[in-house]
Image (cartoon, rainbow, N blue to C red):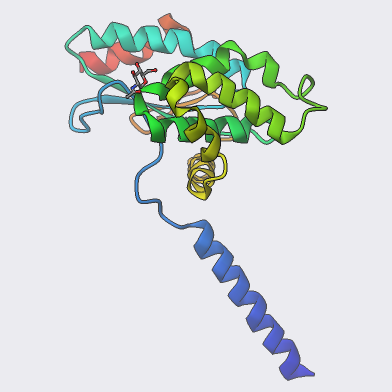
Length: 219
Ligand SMILES: *[C@@H]1O[C@H](CO)[C@@H](O)[C@H](O)[C@H]1NC(C)=O
C-alpha cells in the first residue's frame, strides 16, 4: 500500500515537471512584431505594446501611438515599437485573431500591421455577441476574407491553411505566455525600455506619448 502510494506520488511529480518544462519551452525567436525598422538596442527607446485585436481600448490606443512613432521617426531620435499579441480570454475570438496576425506575419511581415488595422476597422463583427451563434469555421472564414485585403488574393489559401498549421498555434501560445510572464493581465499594456507604464489598460493619447518620450530624449 505504502509503496503504491509513493509510486503514484512519483508519477504525479514527473507529470508536473513535464508540464512545467513543456510550458516553459524557449521559442527560437523572441516574440513580437516590429513596427518599421528593427530597433537599435544600443540607442533606441523601445516601446512594447500588448494588444488584443478584438479589444476596443487597444484599438483606441493605436492611432495616437502610430502618430507619435511617425513624429519621432522624422526626428533624429529613434523610437521603436514591438507589438505583442495578447488574447484576452473573455473575448471569444481573440486567440484566432492573434493567430491570424502570426499567420500573416509569416507570409508577409509588412502585412502584419495592415492586418491589425483591419481587425480594428471591423472589430465589432468579431465581438462575442454578434458571433455567438457562429461556428469557429465561419469566424475563421471571415478572418481569411479580411486577410485578403492585407496579403492579397494570391496568398488567400496560404492564410487559410495557416489555421491548420500547428506552428502558428504554438506561436500564438508563446505570445500569450510571454505576456503572462511580464505580468500582463489586460490590454493595452505598454512597457517603455522594459518598464511598465502606469494606467495599464488605458489608451494613451498623442500628448501623453510626447510627455513620456520627450524627457527620455532630453537625457
Ligand atoms: C506585403 O504586404 C504589403 C502590405 O500589405 C504589400 O504592400 C506588399 O506588396 C506585400 N508583399 C508581397 C510580396 O506580397
